[in-house]
Image 1 (tube, helix red, strand yellow):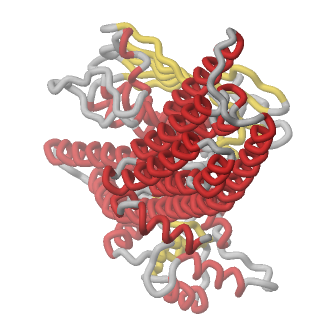
Image 2: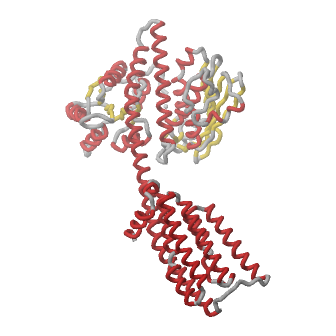
Image 3: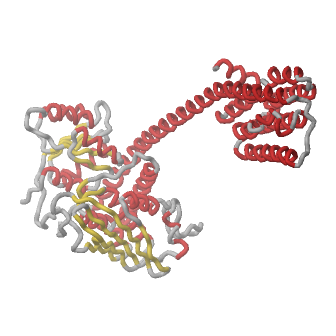
Length: 583
């Protein structure tokens, strides 16, 4: 059959139709249908001549010529639809003609009328198939009506011969069905092969996109880590007012660029089935306060009051995705500050429902800014949409933040809405569902906080980082906090350092030359087997995807922090990993 199919395609189908697989299959079907119909010539022409019906035999010969011309039209016109309709028309004409010369409604040729709409449907599509079906039904109705009103057609074929024609028609249908079945089985197999190839190509493209995004995440976050980190360190030093103002602008612009990078990468992940929310213990109060504190200096520069209110009934610990919750809150607070010239921005957290199975929390961010027009309050949640889309708009942004926040909130089992009035401000409110972290965790109460007099205990820390700028940045942050730092440039150097000295903790970069952080961590964990010791290891990486965090934990790391690194977050993570001691 494959050889037969190749011959058909090479002889009858023009090369231009090979570009698209579905068109190629339709062309193949048209040719096979035409060749199957040519069975009429050797089957029916001798029968009609034997029955002394030369007119019927002549019509069979004419339809054979018409079928051949229809097949040839495919090569010259390069149109499958034209060839299919010509083929259906030729078959329809000869069937009606045979009915007229051999007994009308009782003619065996009417056995074949259903083949006409089938030709149109399979080759040309639903519209042509329906048109030919209507035409075939009309022809049958005409012959039946004529018979009911006594209008008889000349019939020079005896009743016995009609029975013979019926048998021949049935045999012809079986023979054609046999040929078409074998022909179309190969066509359908090719369709499945094409589908498999397309699916595999899509999967490869998706994997390539994921690798591309991971690499872009690393390459963009690495310099951003140095810019933001060094700017923060410089702002902690003694600076004149003008210089401090310049650096504040640098830091704010860097934070905006980082947020845009995160939004682009997150949106590219949201449209894939591999995106999943993490399930980890989190403190809603701590997330809300940390988010507000991130924007404190920016609000102060704009002269805005920044407030955070967490109601007393909010549980102290729930299970959810802390990173995504903070991302949504950060997007909303960022927008509120951006569109507020004076007044205040406030974050409010309250409990809507708490049971042993989980808790629903309500978060709202309100401002006294410019407000949003009523006709824009829904479109702002669409991708790349903003309330002001004019070329003279005052406020920047790519229009990604609210769209991504809306999708994230839906994945967290909630919804987001906005209430706003032009010139009076806006309130964005969303709900999210969380699970219980442990027995008693849904009890409300103040949080995970250190006393003002607490100081960090000096630790011996191994910093494994291949980038010189990031080495300098992280070492400076750690040393300013009183820690003792040893630096290694790759995983192999880290193993040598661990074998030679004792450390309280390792900050391990993931992507490094010679030996990466995951491989080095696995070696350390293998060496610890049976010793009763476990060296705490925190992943230090530019990757920001959830699967990267899972890879780090599976390799044996104890915690994970994504670049760019905030000094306070890094130091708190170290203390949380080792256990805080006060002095």
